[in-house]
Length: 363
Length: 78
Image (tube, rainbow over the protein chains, first blue to last red):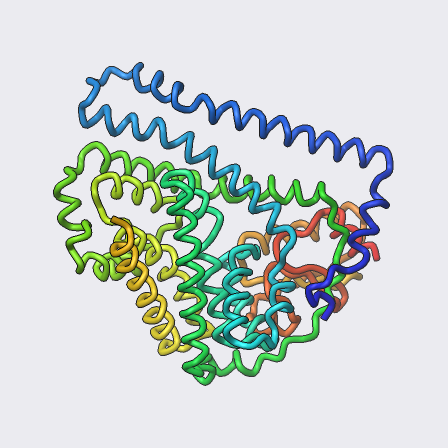
C-alpha cells in the first residue's frame, strides 16, 4: 500500500519542476485572481445590511406587515447565505485536496476500535465523499480490514458533519451553535460506530460483501501543486454551490414564510422546551424526510426565531441529514435489513440524546 | 490498442470520465477500447474506495473524482 499516511517523496520535488517561466506566470495569475475575488467577497459582505435594507425599502409593502417581514428576511438571508457558503466550501475544497478516501482507508485499516472510531469520525469530516460513492467506499473499507464499527463512524460523520452544514450554521446561527453541532455530530458518529462494532454484526453483511478480496492498490500519486489545491477549492465551489443553491433558496423561502406568518406561540407550544415529546417526534419526522443541509438550515433558523427549542430543532435537522431514505436504499446493496435497522436505531437514539441534552443545557 | 476500464456505479461523473477518455484518445489518435465496470464486487476487486476509478491496461491509475485531462492523455500515451 503506497499511502500509509506518508507523503510520497515526489510530491515535494515535482513542484520545483513546474517552476519554469510560463507555468509560474500562469499560477501567479490564478493566485492574484483568487485574491481579487476574496477582496470582492469582503466588500460585498460588508455592504450586505445596507443593501438589503435599501432593497426592502423599494418594495411597496407596509413596514411591519407579515409580507414585509417575510420579504426582508428573504432579501437579507439569500445573499448572506450564498456568500458565506461560497467561502466555507472554497476553504473546505482546499483542505480536502489533502485527503482521499484511499489515503483515509490506509490510515484506518487494522486500527483498534475506540481510537479508530475517533479517527474515522474526524477523517469523515475532511475526506471528500459523495453519496454515490457510499457503497464502493463501504466495501473498499471493510475488505481492506477497516473494522465494521470504524467504517460506520466514518459513514455517519461524512454526511452529517459536512462543510455545508457547518458553513450554514455558522452563517445563520453563529459559531457557538456551529461548534456545538460539530462536537455532537462527531460524538454521535464515534459512539454509534463504537456500539455497532461492539455488537459484532459482521455476519449481517450481505454474503458477497464478506467474500470480496480487495486487490492491492498502488496508486501513482501525481504531483499536487499549490495551484492544484486552489483549483480544487474553486472546483468545489462550482460543483457544490452550483448544486445546492436552489435548495438554499427554497429553504430560505420556507424560512421566510415561517418568519413572517407562523405565530410564535403556536410553534413554541409544539416545539418549545416544555414539550418533551417534540424531540422524539422531530427525529421520527426527520427519517423519511430527505433534504440536504442547504435546504433545512434556513428553516431551522426561522423555527428558532419563533421560539422552538434548539435541541428539538437540531435533532430534526440531524435526523433529516444523517438518516436519509435514499442512502439507506443504496446501502441495502451491502447491508442486510437487520443491519440497517440497527444502524437507524443506534444513530436515532444518539440524535435523541443530543436533542434532550441541548434542551437541558441551553436555556 | 489501449484497454481502458472506467470503474463506477453509473453516476454522472462516471459518464463524464468515459467521455474524457474518448476525447483524449481522439485528440492523440490512439485506439482505445473503453469498458464501464458497474458491478460493486468487481469495482472493489480493483482495491479502490472512491469512484470513478480508471484502469489502463490492467493498472489502476486513478480513483475518486474526475481526473485531470492532461493526466488522462499521459496515461493513454504511456
